[in-house]
Length: 105
Image (cartoon, rainbow, N blue to C red; front, side):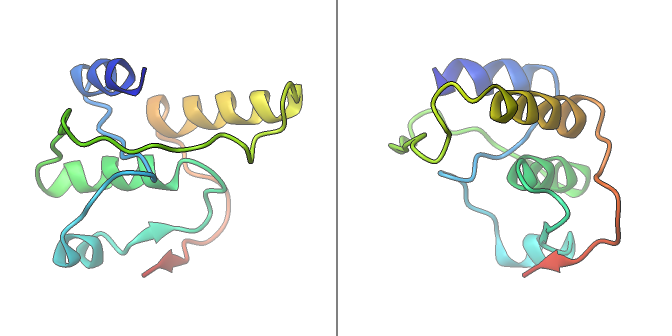
């Protein structure tokens, strides 16, 4: 479940956000230059890591959001590989994609 996923990540200091259910104060969002558009996926998680450097990121277990994985192709190995490799690179290695940063505000 998502609760367990975030509980484990926050325990390890990986305070990534989930695009389907997060809120950020406007001032904080602008202070960290918004979303980094170099990320095809996990830009929300990377945003949480940058916010953690300047302030507090809180996980609210009572906030529930229903979401769908229909955009993911069922059984597509390439999609799963890209998702897992991006996950490791973004949250655990904190290695940004190549190219110039173009913040999305």
